[in-house]
Length: 125
Image (cartoon, rainbow, N blue to C red; front, side, top):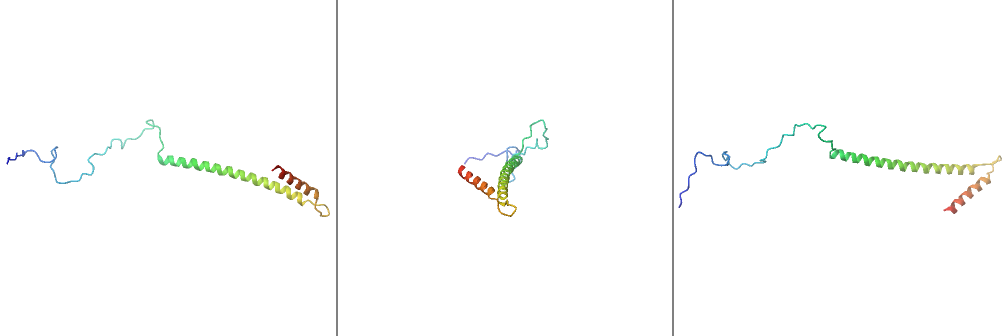
């Protein structure tokens, strides 16, 4: 058998940088954190402020809500216009039907005009 070579006693055994081994130790993270820019304040002239993700989401929500509100307002305006037209037409009809003579008899002239208008509308369709 070959004789084992003896290691010098002056150097510590273990890691190459001179620290002794203390046994199996788990190292969670060997890299040091980078703290240089942590306390640095951003100047206004450095970069234009870019909105972050929550701000972008909020802006999109507001735009969508504004579009929906405009659409609702448009639909409401159309419906109001239709209701006004219907009420005006109904008022004309009730006025024509409710006209009476001095003795309380209904006026047939206005009723006939109303029926004539209805017939003409039916022909147009």
